Image (cartoon, each protein chain N blue to C red):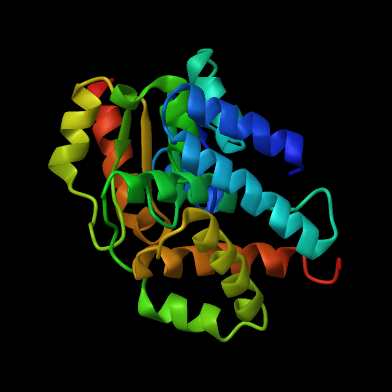
Length: 119
Length: 124
């Protein structure tokens, strides 16, 4: 599985969280634009990204390039990640996941677990 | 990021209707205003702010709301020497918007603007 880290903040920390969960996952850190293009062109299977509001800098470029139906806002300020919603989003075939930076320790494990259970 | 890169970013977001034309136009004006203040063509680390800004304005246009940022984060930002300049830039955005922005959105913009001003500190 290849995951590209886009979004705007805490990219290295998010990459480390992914690697801690499963070191066999191939990760790349790119700008939001390049990361969304990586998924669009098949260089990466999935996109994850963070910003302060979850849906702005984290996902805007992914929504623009991959389409809203392929993107899931996992968390926003005051709205923590919900595992069931992530599982549903993954089962629906969504490819890009955005969350707020302060939720990364919760969001990343939930996303990776859901993706691994799918594949 | 320079003005051409900003415009490319706005074009991508506009083409897929992620942001509205009004939001993209005001964000472009806000970028140029910040360029003028900084006396710089390229503003380092501006991608986050100028992706957040048009999406926030589009969100406001649609009547969508966000919760306020964490108070501790906001308090820290407000104590920054750049906070007052950031508020002037936000005031400019509000003038272009021709309406008061929701306080929660102002608070997030304050975080983003202050961050960019800090990154580019010393370049005036």
